[in-house]
Length: 249
Ligand code: GRF
Image 1 (cartoon, protein in one colour):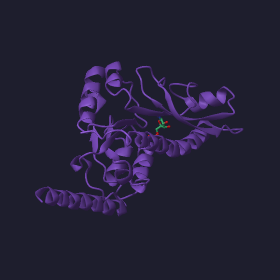
Image 2: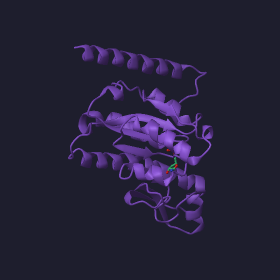
Image 3: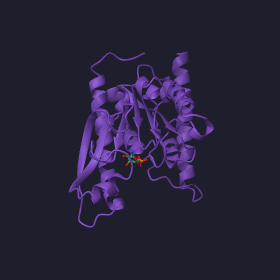
């Protein structure tokens, strides 16, 4: 009974915060989010037997929003026993953080500039992630090279989306490189993360045409549109596989 009362209280607080965020969004002074969806789910940390997803971002976070949106609309909590437990950014000014908060998601910042070494940052990031005992850690525009110790710790749980058809065009400036190479198609790849950058096993891919006269921006926008469909689909499919296995905790 006490637990039920606590859950009810937390739900009310959660709804209040979501409502305040919504009202703030109506104000002209508030930096307008690109997507406003109010989450009235219970805070994740209170749910037992949930497969937590932790999403890491560095910037706009549109892939994170696509995932969180799919999780809500498709009711992953009910159907897959899973939800986005926390969005973590290495940049305090990442635009996606505000949008995540508006959706009622927990957010955290682990600012890489506060750490003297890559190892120290990755250790702090790992501690922040592990607080959620995640089934999946999803990189969504997370612009940091990760240490081998970090990738080994999350082996089989760490996903990334890359804006090219891997194994072509690992690294940066993928759209311009695809155009310069005369590619007729390009796309995006969801892959497992290993110590070698953009080289883990491929989970799923989406293909788009490269059109005559394409700029990197135009091709990038076309690819990003597909990323927003591909990433939730790939994560959903992995969660469906996990639901046939025993639940954690
Ligand atoms: C996406 O193109 C993704 O493939 C790449 O970084 C971009 C992130 O965009 N890794 P967003 O932050 O999800 O909007």
